[in-house]
Image (cartoon, rainbow over all chains, first blue to last red; front, side):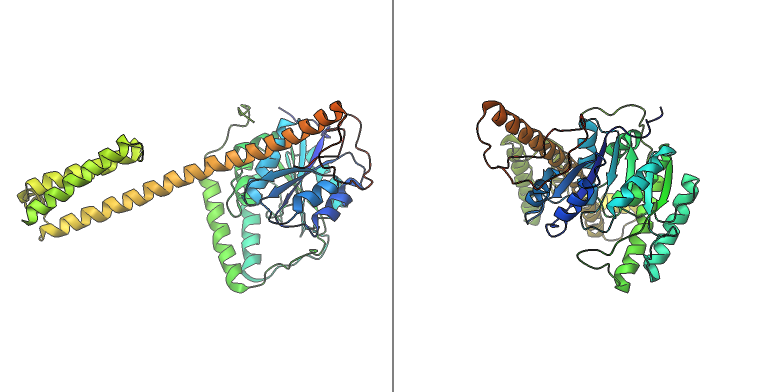
Amino acid sequence: MASMFPPSRVLVIMPAWNEHETVGATVREVLELQRGYDVLVVDDGSRDNTAEVARAAGARVLTLPYNLGVGGAMRAGFKYAQLHGYDGAIQVDADGQHDPLDISRVLAGLESADISIGARFAGRGDYKVVGPRKWAMALLAAVISRLARTRLTDVTSGFRAANGRAIRQYIDHYPAEYLGDTIDSLVVAVRSGCVVTQVPVEMRTRQGGQPSHNPAKAALYLLRSVFALFLALTRRKSSIFVPAGGL
Amino acid sequence: MAVLAAFVFAFLMVVLVIDLVRRKKLREKYAVLWLVVGTGALILAGFPQLLAIVAGVLGVQVPANLLFAMSIVLLIGVCLHLSWELSLVEDETRVLAEETAILRSSLEDLQERMDRLDGAPPRRRVRVPPVPSVLPGSAHPSALHNDR
């Protein structure tokens, strides 16, 4: 069951939680590419005017009644994509750290795969992490690379594209838990037969907030990611070849 | 006296649980567990020597310890069961949240189209900055939404 390439309709899904400062600019940047992408901002229970800003910038908006986390927002977005007949979806951060110019590069990865990851360490850019966080990322990358039978260097990247097949798989399994949106969903997708590839991208500095360098937090991250990986490796596979009912 | 108090307590508990179920304050699936506990307590209160006999058979030296151990196991079981049910409910509410969000967006689209059909001014039109046109036939014709 091959999915069509290139996808005829692409939905850019942007999970946003209290991102009114950056979401407008990011949405406009994507729309200004003039590639025909539709932008869906999933307002994940924001307490600010993220939804209005996004709408004013030209995005379609899904407003979740309360905060579900990135995984919850993304699954809502994938459901929307499937319902409205999109056969390609790409996750882009609302905070502007993903360069909209890279969207077409990441989407191009779908030519030979169901899931294409925009990887931050694959030669371009200068994204760096240190300490336990680095070990965790290296371990995850090694395990998932073996599983996917391809070299993946950045499995926790949120810059990911999916074709119609992967969208169906994600709707079946996309946990709302911490790391569920990256590691768990990816591992189960691979085990269920989705093909994964990666495309090197650059990360721009975040327009708001800084990545944490707290060693205790990094160590906790290591533990949680190993636990998430363990869970994902022992979960049952999903049967994406049977189209799921409902939305 | 102590035996009577235990019996009365167990009896009241069983009555309370049945009454809660009767008044639909407690779902049957949770009530079953408590009814089993209450019935067990009733039997033990009626025949206190039963505990000593079972403790002797199991090799527990102080019969009361058997009671405590059983209570703890039971309470852990109940906690786990509740966590499990809670996770289930959270999963269900997550699905509801997704569906309401999607339905709301469809409703907004419909309202906007109705407003345009009626020729009525939209309820509240968000000013849209010049947005590049979307490919013909791709998705929805307008980036305008009326927000309620």
